[in-house]
Amino acid sequence: MNSSSNIKNPISELTKRFHKIQENDPPYPVNSFLKYTNIIEVQEAEIDFDGYAISIGGNKYIIGYNRNLYDHRRRFTCCHEIAHTLSFKGKVEERTNAEEILCNRIAAELLLPTNVFIKFANKLEPSISSFLELSKIFRVSLEVVMDSIRRGYNNFFVLSILRKL
Ligand SMILES: [Zn+2]
Image (cartoon, rainbow, N blue to C red; front, top):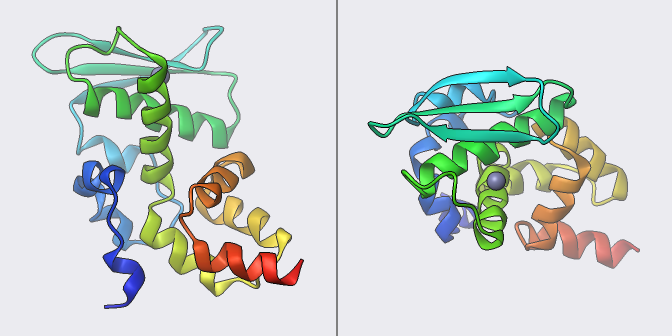
């Protein structure tokens, strides 16, 4: 067991039920997450915002995403909505800024699990183009990759880049 697999954070703890999926190589299909949730339907919708989660009672949910979103953003939106159903059972309609930030963190952790991210990032040359490569590997936007790095998911990687700049 290497040191990176021992890294623990509250978000990883919350998403640990998904870890079995993360033993596979990325990108992680959003559909594969659904069986670990109480979501019974994912809808493609004609809406002017990114996505929604609706509680339909009995701890069951429907989530939806804007049909015009491109792949990376659609994946992130679905995971963000999954996060609403995971962490705020029965209150998905009452959303606060803190909750939105937390759901973004959870969504990033689902698509870009800390341990897997570190493993892949460390295989790459420390360079700016590696950010793009990571975005492709995990099928997430560059913004999500950068956010994850900013949060210190991969200090080795960041330090290596900074040393080279
Ligand atoms: Zn939200």
